[in-house]
Length: 468
Image 1: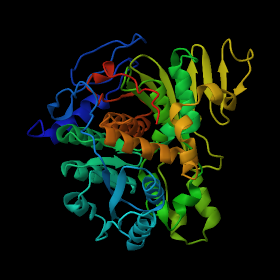
Image 2: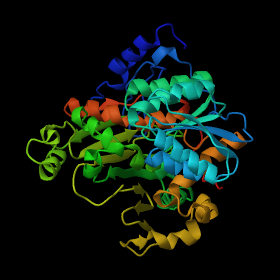
Image 3: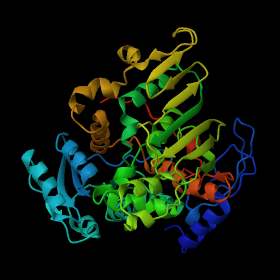
Image 4: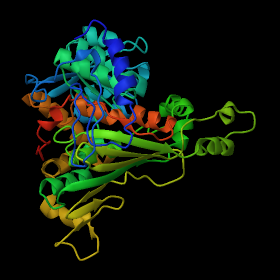
C-alpha cells in the first residue's frame, strides 16, 4: 500500500470528501489533487482526499500481457454462474479449470457442463464459503470469475488479484465506498484487471443506442434516464437461490441497491471516466410497503416472514450530475407489481433514444414530433459486435448479451487489450449504492462522488464501437 495507515486515510476520505454536501455547487468530481474546477455547468467542484495518498493511475487503462489461453477459476456456480460457465465452454481460447461453490451439487453440475463440452474435468473447491481463498492460492488459473452473493464480490476479487490473477465479478462490484476504493487500490498495486461483468452494456438495443451516439445522430448528449425496475418480491422471499440472501439487504439499507444495469449503458453513452465523470448525486426513497404486503398475502398468521420489517423504500430515485453538467436519473424498484423496465433514455441535442419499447427520434430524419421503431435502425446502425456475433449468441442468457460480455472479456485478455469495463468503471457505478443511501439518510442532501481515476477521466479516450 502507498501509506502506512491507508484505512484511516480512507475513512477520512469518506467523512470529508465523498460525502460532503455540495450546497448546490455541482460540476466536478472529488479527486486527490484537492483542486476546485468548473465544469460546463458553471458550478464548483467539491474536494476530497484519496485514501492512502495513492498516486495518479497509469496514463492509459491497464492492458495486461496477452494470454494464449485464459484458464478460469469460477466461484459461485448457481443460476447466473452456471449460465456463464455454459457461455465460456463455447468460447475459443479459454478453459474453466477450477470451480468453487459451497454446494457440492452446484460444483458437480458445472463440472459436468465443462466435460460434456469436451474439456478436461475441473478441480473442485467445495470446503466452505471461504474455499475461494484456496482456489486463488493453489489453482493454476489466470482469471477468477465470481457470481456469488453481493457480500463476497470484493473478498473474492481481492484474493484473486493478491494471488496474481485477474478478477471478474457479477454486479454490483461493491456496495460501500470503502470497498470500491479497496478494489481500485488492489488492482493498481497488483497490475491486474478487476472487471465488473455488466451484461446490459452488451444488450442489442443498448449497443444500437451507443452506436447512434458514436455516429453523431443524437448530437451532443445532455441527459439520460435509466433504472432497474423489476418485481422481485417472489424471488426475495424464496427459500432458495437469491431468496437466501437478497432480501436481507432490504432490512437495513435504503437507497438504490442495484444501479448498474440501467446506469452502465448510459454511462458509456456519456463517456463516463473517459471524458466526463459522475460528480454529485441527490437521492430520495418512497415509503416501504411492497414487501410487507406481499408477505401478508402469502404467509399465514404467525409465520416469521410476516414479522419482518424493511428499511428499503419501494421506489428510489437518484439524480446524478456529471463534471460537464449533464444529468442522469437512476431509478430502483424491486418491491412493487410492475412489468420489467430499465427505461434506457438517452437525450441529445439532435435526437433521442427511448427504451421499453425501443424507439428513436432523430431531427431531420424522423417524421416531425413522431417516434420511429428502433428496429428500423438496425439495418444501417447495428452495433458491429452484434452484427458479427448475433448468431453465435443465440440461446445465451438475457437475449444473448451474457455471451457478448463473456466473449469480449476473453478476447481482451487473449489479445492484451484494455478491458471494455475496468476497475474505475466498476467503482464509479457501484458507488451509487452507498452514495444514494447516504443522501436518503441525510434528507436528500447532495453528496459528491469520489473520482476513482484521480483526474485521468480528462485524458482517457472513449470506449470505441468495437467489433468482434
